[in-house]
Image 1 (cartoon, rainbow, N blue to C red):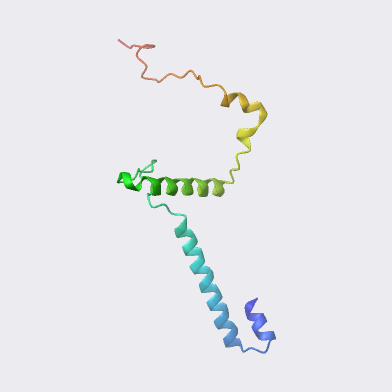
Image 2: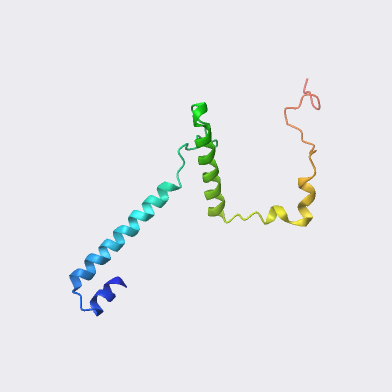
Length: 111
């Protein structure tokens, strides 16, 4: 489209190609920088994000993890609408949930 604009205004094909190449290069650069911006300074190790190395880094680590979580929610299209449904309100008031681990020796002892 930029090439056609340059041609209709009396520009030469070379000028349109140069502008098109510059435009394409700028788009690729922005795409690469945008992808880099989504990385975290604390990459996950297996399924966990490691904590900060020093106590002084805690605020920066927390901000980085919050940004990472926001980006993940945006990628999957999460808006929080499911958790605010009235018929599921009881789940936010019920703080007791019976669970049992398979290794629970008070319930089952193989010996």
